[in-house]
Figure (spheres, rainbow, N blue to C red):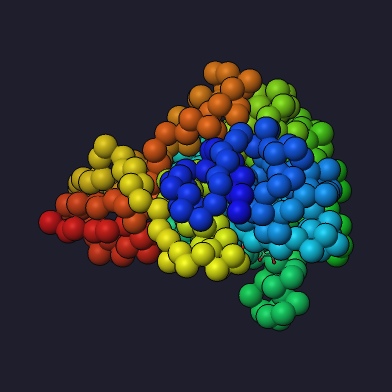
Length: 376
Ligand SMILES: NC(=O)c1ccc[n+]([C@@H]2O[C@H](COP(=O)([O-])OP(=O)(O)OC[C@H]3O[C@@H](n4cnc5c(N)ncnc54)[C@H](O)[C@@H]3O)[C@@H](O)[C@H]2O)c1
Ligand SMILES: O=C(O)[C@H](O)[C@H](O)COP(=O)(O)O
């Protein structure tokens, strides 16, 4: 048996060696020649798994250690009898942390409080539902848009895009990239979408670059139909649009899901899926030695401070979007390198927040965000 694995997938070395010949390669070097005698590939978004790569190969199973699977040509896989799996929810908490840092940093920079603002969450799956809860916890009004869910669950808890366009001060997108069909999301944010915005909202794209029509977004910013954008996912990565970069309030190199926890979950789900498919007997395999940051205790004194500023301090102590923003602006040509050498980031549950003079309501909110709390 032969398995070809993207060499940027962490924690996986050693998992399959007892069962197979294992080849580790950069996504860009995963060519038809390399995969032709492989039984399985473990991949990331950087490898297009399509006819061009797979035709004539032995590949029977593809595991992508990501939630997004727009790099897999699922029609071709069906036709060729190749099974595939992604890693649903693996990095949802990481994107939630990214959005929390983005919102708190944006509010700090523009000197306003988030509570009372209205946010539209477009796509309410693993990520969007966490982001919706986060926004409710910090006192925002939340409008949810998810037509596929609405068709199944009924209209009660959902809002139309039109309502979001009318009411939202901010809109954050957490949809898959769908090129076709009634739920297509390619260029969902286009001239027409922007033309219908009533409140000059902040738009956030941490899902896929192609969900935003870059040209339309830049026009929206120039005409002030859109007040600002925060962009993690770009059209044509890694050749990102320099003008959009210069216009964005925060710009990051597609790292919203890059916590160590998110990576470890993606690897775990891929290894376990391959084990189940090929009956390798390592269905409960777990990654080991997931790195910790230098400091996992956050001490906060809430005297004469708002609950909002306590939450803000806790969130920003775990992850600063500013650092990623500064690194990308310094050298946008390093987009892929910044991703490849991404520093250790852990999610909220890794941290113990020691609070002094923090009221119960704020302590409860820290717990809702999944911090561990020790109250003095
Ligand atoms: N920047 C990053 O690092 C990063 C990390 C994780 C996920 N993502 C992207 O975010 C997307 C969402 O992630 P997830 O884990 O929540 O996925 P998910 O599959 O759990 O949720 C996607 C949700 O979008 C909904 N949806 C589909 N089409 C829609 C449409 N036209 N309008 C509104 N809603 C629609 C679906 O019904 C579903 O509830 C992924 O597909 C991926 O592309 C990016
Ligand atoms: O779809 C996902 O899970 C995310 O976009 C993830 O961050 C992609 O990571 P990559 O495969 O590009 O390393």
